[in-house]
Length: 297
Ligand code: GUN
Image (cartoon, rainbow, N blue to C red; front, side, top):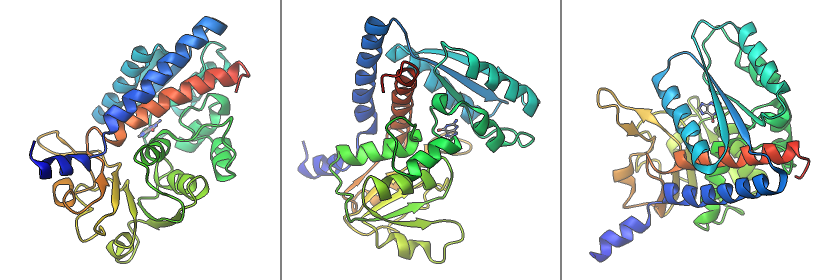
């Protein structure tokens, strides 16, 4: 094989392969739980409306549950579902003893208050880690029994797998969402001992901030935003972006992958990078939820 080609290939972080290792471990844990406690972890997934991308993500989550032996139930609700109706379903799922995890796919339609729904989910079933109590546990760095949001946890595990030295490193996170940017900052600050810069749509000269960073994690939702002007040679780039391009329908990350590959130390591809890790971490959180219900965590 061409030596240079091999070297370039080595820079591509194999998110899908790493995720499949985690899924194997989850399968084993599920089997042990069935044998020892005669229960299978169960996840209930709720989706409201017909957003095609959200339906694809949810279908992937359900498919992966089946693969690792987690029972799942999907509730597809019409876009006109009222906040009251959705709250009623969440309350039902909170009560069901055999149901360990609840995931309400975001975004919800505009007439529904996201925060109200998330806060209504029993914190011990909140496998997304979005409930205020789970956010507080992350903030206080006390997550043994709580849930850490899946995408940030997936990014953290990828960094551990590639041996990235977070301790004392300069990290730039692009995007400040509740799902990725903010919880990831806490995780890398408190568990990684990294120095964190948050870059967002109001930042002045954001590329000057990211250019200083040893690690850039982008969750901006802007295709090809991160180009060679934004990245220091030898930096690591974790691309959380999943932008559907029109009219091809092709998935495009936030990073200009082809332009960055020659200059980075390592980079995640889209698809096949962070996405599979998010789902693997969701499966882990479902097992944890079942363990929490058994009081064995
Ligand atoms: N929408 C985009 N990412 C996520 C996620 O991780 N969880 C939920 N519930 N909705 C999302």
